[in-house]
Length: 86
Image (cartoon, rainbow, N blue to C red; front, side, top):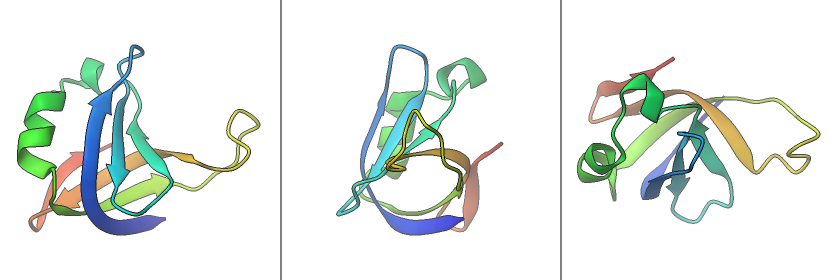
């Protein structure tokens, strides 16, 4: 699945996942172990905050997230280029 929107927040959590939040959307999108893959939250913020992005994500259900509020990112595009590809 894909969604397009303006990035409002980017932050990481203790597991190394990097979380992306779009303006006016309740869902959080994450790159699993993004920090261990060599991504840097500060650089992503500088490049992408308040920018329109296209997020590709896995659309699946899990009992750990029954309301589907957290989606695993498989790709991010911005400024006509790939930012991340799984």
